[in-house]
Every structure is written in structure tokens, then in C-alpha cells.
Image 1 (cartoon, rainbow, N blue to C red):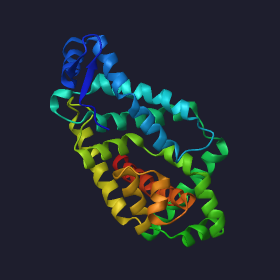
Image 2: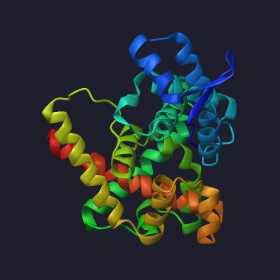
Image 3: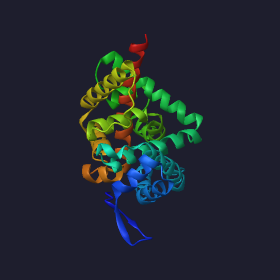
Image 4: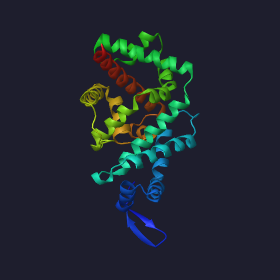
Length: 267
């Protein structure tokens, strides 16, 4: 979704987009800021449409759009156009992050759902620490005392909670860095923070490589190719609910790996 020029209605002329960015960045021109936000507003709808596919039916699209507008404004305020990077890529991750943060703050998750999510996460952690490999559904069922059907239902029920509880800033930075080599801010960080971020990238990359084939494919298509779960379902010839389960399992494994790494660092 590329925007090259902004139309200047008052004069009938077209101004290069860089002129609006320059006016905002150098003079903090409020008119330029308003024009930029208005021009890129379709990005909010774009992200809301894609994100809503994997979320609970209780989440209203209007709420996502409201949160997304905050993310877009934040992106416009912080983007450094002079670096020659693509704003759309940066803005999409900022918008998505704002939507996720908004849902978290509204506390959409019930206590029961949180407990179920924690139960599965603890099972993955215990089994993978014991077996030193990705666990199978059958092993997870035995550990939890569930049938395969019950496990799949539990994964579907907790998919929404799993998406919200995943460390999105990590995913955002990983997505920007690995896919677009884009850094959100140029401000220098403490060496320890930079090292921790680099280690996190390595942990995530290694975990993704160790995922079962179908889960790895879902992660690649969802986070790297930016397809919706419905689109992935068509490609893999599986039902959307099955794709949601695979996505949920992958997130459990990634979060477990990150928490295990964090516990080793702090111990």
C-alpha cells in the first residue's frame, strides 16, 4: 500500500510526499501531520481486517480501528523519513502493536481462559524441558489427561488469549528486523539491552526452525508473508480452525522458549 504524493487541494497542485514529511519533521507543522495521518488512514483498516480474522468474535472491528489510529499517529510522530525507509512497513507494525495493546488494556480475557492458557503453557514447558525437543499432541494429551479432541478444542479456545499474551514487542522488532531491516527508533540503547534483543532474535529463530513442519509454515505465512489465517487455510487445504490451532501451538512453543531463556538470564 504505497503513497507517493499528496494532493494539495487549495492550489490544485501536487506536493511530493517528502515535502509533507519535511514540514512535519523540521517545523512540526500540524497541517502536514494531519495530511500524513489522513493519507495513511487506510492502513488502519487494512491491519484491522487482517488481525480481526484470528480474534474472538467478541472483539469489535471498530475498537481495533480506534486503537489503530493511535498507533498510526505514533508512527507518523516517530518515523524518520530522511532515512529513506518505507513508512508503510513501519506503520503497519506500530498500528498492529497499538491494537494488541488496546485489547490487553481492556482485559478481554476471562479468568477461566487465562487459567487454561497457563495450564497448556506449563505443560509445554515441562515436557520440552524433559524431552529436549518439540512435543507431540499425543504426549501433551497424556500429560494433561485429555483426549486429542479435547486438546484441539482447548487450543482453539485459548488461541485469542495466546495471541494477546505473546510478547508482541518481540515479534514486532523481530518482524521488522528480519523481514525489513527496519529499526523503530534510532536512539542509542544500553549495550545490555541491545545484547538481550539480539539474543531474543536468535532464540526465536532457533525455535521457529525446530517447530513441526506445519506450525513452522503457518508462522512463516502469517508473520513473514502477512497472510490471514483464512488465506493460510486455503493454501494448506485445512480448515481455519485447524490453522488457528497450529498457530496457537507455535506461539506456546515460542513463548515457552523465550521464558526459559529469560529465567536462565535472571537466575
